[in-house]
Amino acid sequence: MIGSGLLQRWLQAGMSMSLENTLTPFGKVTVRLEPREQRKFLLLLDAKWHRGVPHVKVQVPGYITGKRKETEEFLLEPVP
Image (cartoon, rainbow, N blue to C red; front, side, top):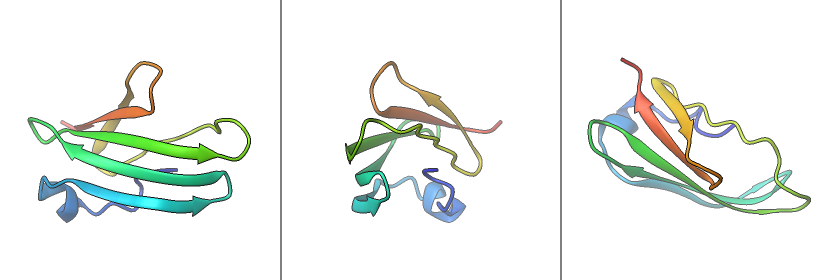
């Protein structure tokens, strides 16, 4: 699961954020959040998986997650 530990105050600041070269059981992962208009964010995932791509679940408190095409990009929209 990606994003569950993000604090609302960090998101409300509307700034870019990243976790780089984080080691997981599935491989090394970099996660970036880039602010967009209307309190939205684009979450970019760059990973070096050990054995194929695992099921990736993005869940950020207070946001609805939509996957963009076949890329490792997720659009985060605030819950109305």
